[in-house]
Image (cartoon, rainbow, N blue to C red; front, top):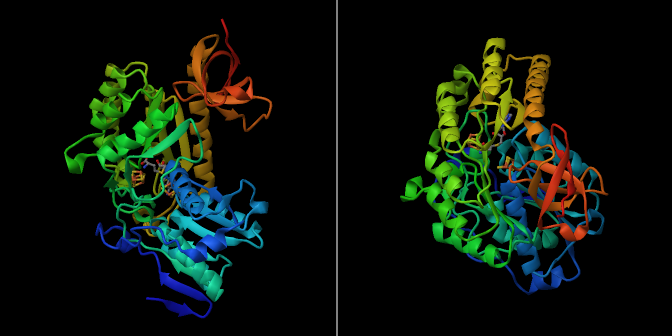
Length: 475
Ligand code: SAH
Ligand code: SF4
Ligand code: F3S
């Protein structure tokens, strides 16, 4: 039903309630809307796609690009040349949202399409409508097959349009043009979509809906295609890859085993949840040389009371025991984690329990986040009684503890030679290249552009907390 808000056409709006109902209805697009109008319209039109957020968004953007190319649009890597700017947004923290809005303010004279996780938020879409923001189309990523229909409506009626569908189904329909456009040597492959863990602070289960596994064979076929195309690295992605298969009598370990047999030089996966993490995954990692010895296992807090309030379904003892068992099977495994600082009611004592566990486990990498209130999540209504100053102070304390650990740990790299997959030109210094060790550590070095996308040997000559410096090694 179309609601006419004078100059906005509203087809549908997001609903957090609907987003948690796994009703496989509303398959809005069996095929992409494409007709003579769009074929004519797309001629000489250029599209610029901006991506915020995680690997899931990166992969969605890649699919969006595939759809625009299919209709005859050209891509551009400069927004200045673009007729259409497609903004794929992230909602995980307030900071991510602010970034998107400040970017939108700078865009002038473009058709703006707003999608991704912020487009799934009730409050954000209401704001866009109420403030009559100059965003031309708000569309959920699971409606993407309708994009050209909506574009036509917008051009004909000159009205802005909102069409966000919170009924999730197989969001990344296998029938979409499914190219890997962003890199010819590294690919993200979807394993499962959405999340059922419902951690109390997190918006992802509402913006991406219930956990839906992708078909086992479809995943393997896609990986095989990438292997045939000589891809050097595959990252298997999902909010919780570790719970893959539980509903369908298979497991992530089995999937990983099959993917590894395809002989792609490097495979890793993101992200696992400690609650349903099986040690079989570690056994499979140990079995195959081409699976990186790298595991990201978010702990979020080292305090049992806070873990309970977060709804994480495990306590600190459980996590410690799990890491212990993982290291028994795979002693050299590289372990990274996520930690949230300043969760509502977190006391100094509770924060110290996080410091304690960080000291005990000695993670190889920690991604730290200050708690951010997300509208619609249970933690939104908790008393956020930790002041900003205390949050910042705790952040700095954890940061310096971790820095000491990492400096010590990085020493082992010095003067050794490693296989490095060269990702590209370094973002910090245009004269150097950037690549990653099998432990996912970033290394900078001088080298030729022709090395990009290849695995080469690099000798480490300097260590810094967040990266290493090295030189190309030739015998
Ligand atoms: N599914 C993944 C990734 C979730 S988002 C996982 O569970 O690991 C990535 C990280 O963002 C989370 O691990 C968490 O540490 C952080 N995060 C999520 N919501 C947040 C919030 N409201 N405030 C601060 N950090 C948050
Ligand atoms: Fe969010 Fe928790 Fe799901 Fe991760 S596991 S996406 S933190 S709800
Ligand atoms: Fe952000 Fe959505 Fe990913 S909120 S972290 S882009 S799942």
